[in-house]
Length: 48
Image 1 (spheres, rainbow, N blue to C red):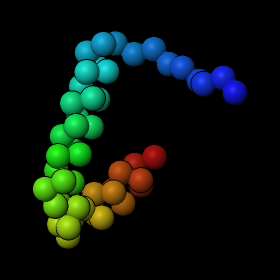
Image 2 (cartoon, rainbow, N blue to C red; image 1 turned 60 degrees about the vertical axis):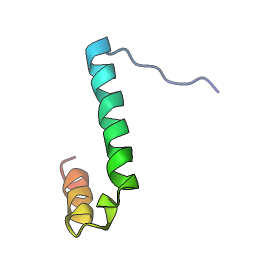
Image 3 (cartoon, rainbow, N blue to C red; image 1 turned 45 degrees about the horizontal axis):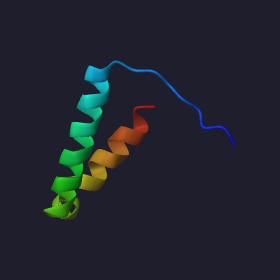
């Protein structure tokens, strides 16, 4: 199976990596136990 590929600017790629790393750190520190965490996920899914 061939993987689908996209092209983005390196600046955008770096920003996405940084955001992903920061989210991982927040989750490791327990932010996923915060009451608004599920609200934020719901908000993100409703923006589509």
